Amino acid sequence: MKDWDLLGDSFVKLFSLGFLFAMGIIWSWVSFFRVDTVVVKVEMQEPLHQFCVNVDALHGWHEFEFPQPYGHVTYLGGSWSVDADVLFPVGPEGYEELWESGLEFPGLRFTDSAPTGALLIEDQERGIVWFQRPKCLANSQHRVRMRINEIDEDLFDNHGSLTVCFGKRSAHSH
Image (tube, rainbow, N blue to C red):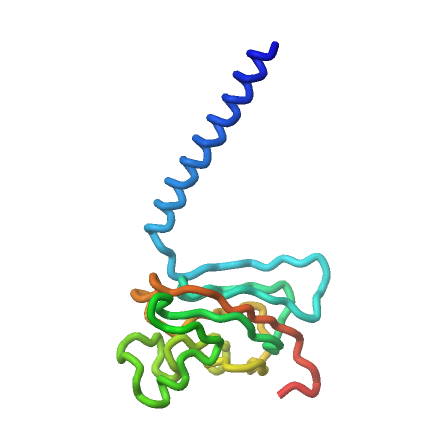
């Protein structure tokens, strides 16, 4: 009886190791073929006054679909870097000091209207907008797209993520 228990335990361990090895190969293969847009459909059981999502620095556009419209960015937190080995992490303002002093590398920004590493949010009415702090979108939206301000070809050495929270627009929101 004990020999059978040992054999069964060994089989489970061997099967588990084989499964983890196969998943590692699949993950490596999937990671090799990078997708430039991450789409997340947010499903909720009941309406929330605020909802938070994460935008990572390794991908281009992140698209979030909400079942109810949100029109106000209520919170921005976290940090990311466009080159984890060389540059310090920043928040949604990006490398604003380098941008203002003209020390940034040309041609690396997705848009020239904001510094490298800035949080970009695509507003349905205003287009691509740099969000440095919580503020209102032009109108309440069911779908929002966000990204780090860096061209897609250079995202591979990025690190970190930002948390962006959305809430409903109030009558007093600007």
